Length: 270
Image: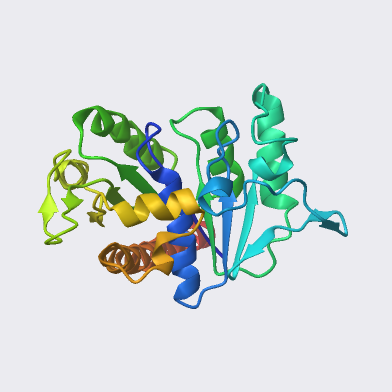
């Protein structure tokens, strides 16, 4: 199973929308996929998928059964709260325990991919998730504005620092598709994500436009990749590139591991 974390340096950039639709796009491509919402204080996945009224989960042989939605297995902190308005008032150790149980005590079964929606920033929860899940790669989401890009730089550096390869930077809300001519209009600017990726020597995998259909799908609790739209086609190409980068990095890591083991063996024999 490959684990992909979706992160950003700040909130409000569409990270959860990207995570949810990444999971469903992977499923549409024939992969057994899980989606883990690890944003403890602000879980958005239930709302985005129309699951905000789910309360509690069944358990079997000591493991929680995730919600199954259109072939994707979903688990979120939001399912465990008494109501959607209940705040989570926890200190660090309790958060760590919850994250550990979400990874180890949810019956994910056999998966090809587990997409993990991280909370904003690079604090305790993010560190715990990386330590416990050992992700194979990270997807970093930004918007074109400089205020977002400054925080996203921190997220990229964090991922590199903890040894999680960045398999792609995605620029969300990059221009708007005109509802009449379908040509892009740069409402918030564009190109900042690509420039950041080039400066930091990590892959830039594409831009998602501001599209009313994406907004509506989130409000209706439906992944936008289920629609036949230009945004879906754009996102499909982004996911293809992410998978290609993940495979390339995986092969490189395997070669490095084999080289290290060979050197260790030769050193021991010498």
